[in-house]
Image (tube, rainbow, N blue to C red; front, side, top):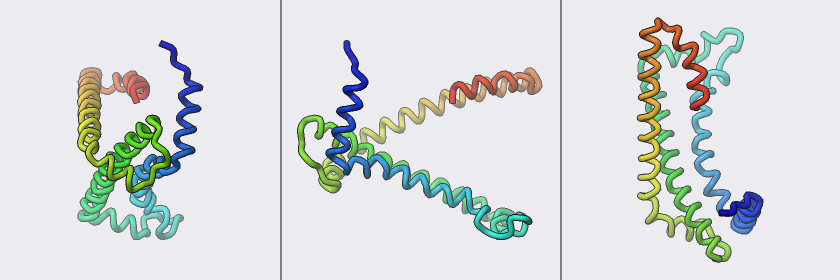
Length: 167
């Protein structure tokens, strides 16, 4: 089997340049993921930088209800991003398959509506891959915990390098 990476990249560029609506489908999940930035950067935009404990964010964090609020906000953004990512991946994949088959210019609404039957399959694939990665990660962390427990923490120095290569 002959695989020409230059030909693949050239064809991909031609398809995406001809159908610029694919760029919207590809970038939409990243726009949603950007909503995390205000949750994490909130402390830097409020208050006096010389005295960080005087910021309203610090006072908010000390309130027990704020941890719940930030946790719920984090999970809500994650779920919205996951749903939008599944929908945009379905539309992008269907659009590329149609473009490869010779369909001329495609618009946003038509491609999105045509991709709706495939959303469940793509969500299932996301779910299966996510569960498999989570199981592997939990097994690795369990082994890491056991090594740390047996060696009283010295083993973690060596396992950190292995963890970095996996991630």
